[in-house]
Image 1 (cartoon, rainbow, N blue to C red):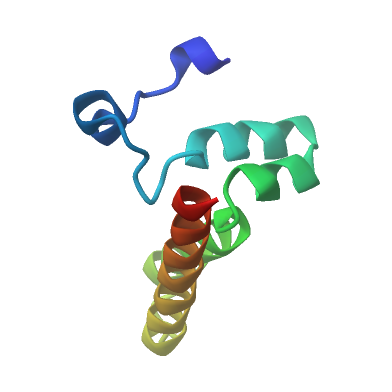
Image 2: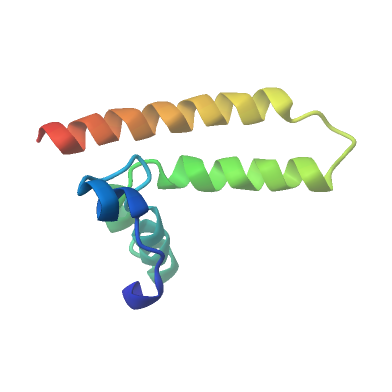
Amino acid sequence: MEEYMIPCMNKKIFGIDCLGCGTQRALALILKGEFVDAFHMFPAIYTTILFFMVLGLNFIDKTRNYHKLIISLAIINATIMVISYIYKITS
């Protein structure tokens, strides 16, 4: 499965991980049912999935306003990504 994944251009060019490194592998782990390993690979995977689900729902269901929820999830997701990235590069 990993041979079909898109490589991280930041890692290829600069040699360091980006904020989203591990997303594809974490998603593959979720599809295999390895939920804890997916969280360890990329801690923001579950908030990312939830964010995209609500974003998709926003396009499908035009009767409700999901903008505040989308912004809140984006902020939470970005915060988790930054904190986990800082933890990864300092440890």
